[in-house]
Image 1 (spheres, helix red, strand yellow):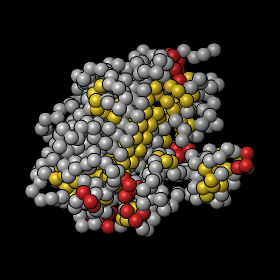
Image 2 (cartoon, one colour):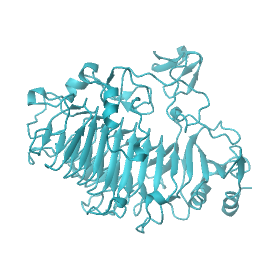
Image 3 (cartoon, one colour):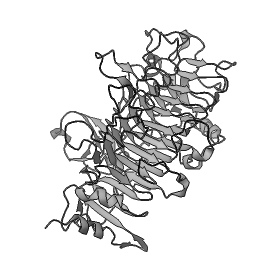
Image 4 (cartoon, one colour):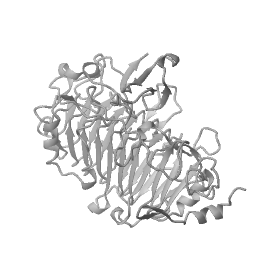
Length: 554
């Protein structure tokens, strides 16, 4: 007989002993298994009980989910994830006992979709679908994020969120006065578009006065109305963009992440090709006085907005760190009437501090009609600060300070005229974005267009004022987690990077990016994500496979 919700919730409080540590561990499967009491994988509780059980969890509880779809709390149709819990999804159906180690490079995901009725649209029109914080989303928190235990989330796909108002609560995940680490998560098709320009301005992750870190995550096809960052938006803890104390600021850190096709729209009612794009921050945005953001080994591609920071808008009085990223094809729509596109990769606001090292930031093809007033990197005022560790490959730079390109280093490739502009054509040739063995897609630069001295970059970055939570950055790796070659290249992807060794039973905390490459002793045929496909490649369709630790094209 199927367990009642009351009984399942009671069982959530049972304590299991693991080694010398008391840990409440709770196992779930989409349809439940065995006794459905959550005590093991064989007795996993059904997905319908996860939402309410999770909402009532205490700090230190751990939740493990088999891959598949999960619905939210049946009482609220929303997810509430408390402070200090561990939530790990994507485990295969072959899991046994209480084993929790898993190699997330294999690609498993558990899905939280806001499309509850199956009509293709999200049903969370009033609040964010997922709330992580100190209290209900309708309350303004007075707590400081450092007062709370960190929440960990692994292997969850957050998708199909749909918000229809402009309260900056996010269209999928709202993090308020919290500490959260996301690992191997995906944020897909989250939307705040409306036909009313007064609504919108919500990111897939909305970060208020919180410490949020994302490792090996994917942000694709997210939309925000008006502007302010379709993938993520960073704001002070009261969402206040006016001056305030540093204790109100947020810190957001992204490493080895892929951002693709995140768009700020104002309205979608026009004919295709004539859509009115939103005003700024197409991919991501840091509101004035919002805090600090880090992008490390990330791909930011195919974002769109009207002007002012398609890749990222860094608002006034903030700090932003850009290290070994690739910005590719992030066009501004409104160019001719404004005289400049105000930063198709980066728009650095008044009195912001901006740190650059080993990035590729180019947008234009050779035959595009652009002028000296266009800018891939836009430095807004004389008070806007630029610091460089060198080896950046930049397109056009528009600097409103009194010294041209103030702050960039001698090793940076900054154009001195339209004839010397670094374009997509010059830097990438005919290369395209594709999967090259990691969990996310990348694009390879031409090696001779972007050489980089990693040791020199690391030495300068070490002198920068880095937040404690950002000191985890690994500049010896590329976006895939591969070790960069001795002679590396700028951007997020090193075509000559060395893959990590396969570890068959790897705890993801110890090795989050291990995958199938580099183990010639492992027999059989595997997909690029490490899935075993048999012993004979002849029976498989055309494609790229891993055999004996090496890529084989059939």
